[in-house]
Length: 102
Image (cartoon, one colour):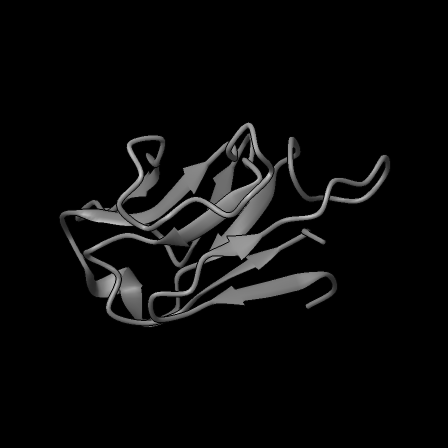
């Protein structure tokens, strides 16, 4: 897969902003891997970033749900507008790979 980033564990990942390629402010594909079996809960969260430019803490109030699990989800989900930072949600027991990002 070209231009991929894998999010695992408690990592908070910063996406780059590029004029032509995917990343912050652009769409991306989330390959759920073994998380496809999860039927409820938050799989992926995003944060637009702090005014200071610092990485937000895991408990910061700015985190929002990008992807929730459903009983009918497929192995790949499109996220229309990615924020600056992403992390796994509480329901994600396995890594999620974002495709089409920098």
